[in-house]
Length: 312
Image (cartoon, rainbow, N blue to C red; front, top):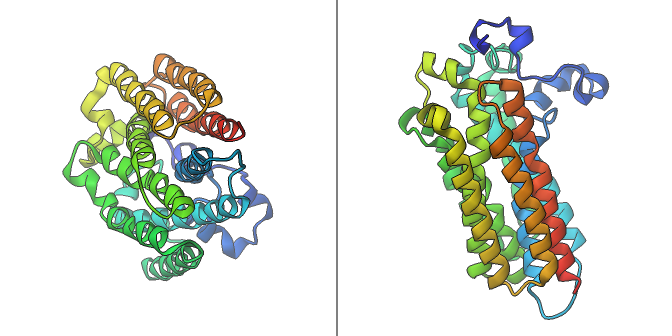
């Protein structure tokens, strides 16, 4: 049964009985749902490239060291805020589409819980908070971080004009691979650029899996995606995207002069991606969501390898 034909309550992508429902004051819940605070996987996927790159810059240094814990914390807060801002902007621009799809019709804006004017004010507040975090870094990192907005604002419109909106998301969501290194090193070089490229292909894979949840509704309302473009040929493309991801991550480690623990972590992370590509059922929205969410573990395994390499 497609999402389009399910009841709104059954098809809604808003999780039931999340921590927001259990603990947050009732007036705050629509705003927290608008920022996706009840669904942390997007924050993880935005945050992990930041952590990878900051840890990579530390591991590539001349002495064994741990990543700067203050930077780790700032990136964590920044990822929560900027992911929330991105989702708010996405929901503002997609409100007409969202109202036509059972999975998204109960989101705060199409359901009427939050007005467009209120969402715009909320967006500005999140962006200002994000700026407050960004200015904690060096000037070069501030400039690199601010440049990400050139990708963030056009993103919601990509699904209207290209079959590859996941590619634009890859450019946007992995920008932290540049910011993390810039915050530590004050410059950019080959390792973060290779890591950014790896993140791009990683996102092509995981967001194609995610998009398979909506392919029937997307076809009805005219929204494009790699899931619709690739269709039944998705699996070999997942192996291709993920294979390139691993190759570029290996090159990033080599360019950074990382020790063997990095490659041990990369090998374990490779198995995780291979499992996704081999096992995903693109006709099952629930399985697609499960595989999509599992990318948090891929990212954490790789992070552990980077940190371990930096201790040698």
